[in-house]
Length: 107
Length: 123
Image (cartoon, rainbow over all chains, first blue to last red; front, top):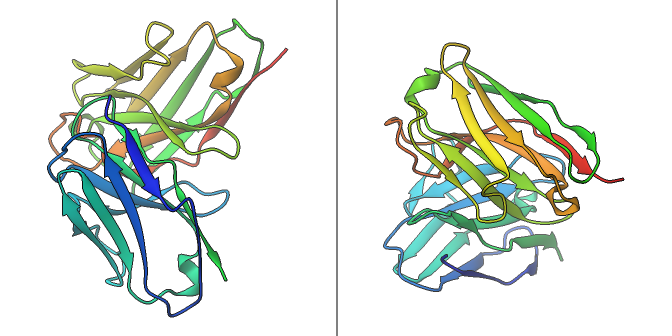
């Protein structure tokens, strides 16, 4: 099983800020990493896959980077609709695993 | 438009069984692997099980292996999850999930999600 450490668990920021969320793997996974956004009471939505490929329809203020064991999700200019919980997911091997989540809240 | 509609959730006693169904529409069902992902109340996401487009390959999380069985009926565009020997820790919203890759092979990236069905295991 590949273990993941997602940080921070809670992030306070303001509209217009640039924020980053980190995901670290217990072993290398090449670029087999995805990022999801989840709002309360809703199903998650895919933002990024293959570490840096933006899913169709996702705003360009979202970006992903990294390979191997260290990955980052960046939101370049926070909008009000971005305050949500974010999860990373490795799909290099099964069982696929999710990070613990990062709750992004308004400062 | 892709639609995934789960059903079959509810309250069940510990040790009991439940079968979840997911009716899919808006895409060629047999061309995509499908998964079940769950989320316990107030907790994070946990992948449960996946099945290839043909149904020939299945995968399970260690936490459900031997108790849950994933299957699909491509003639009915429906995904199933048979859950036996249920435990309190299986209490969660269960999401039906469609893979991103148009290959039928299980990749694990979820591009479409159902609205979820709540399973509560309690006496």
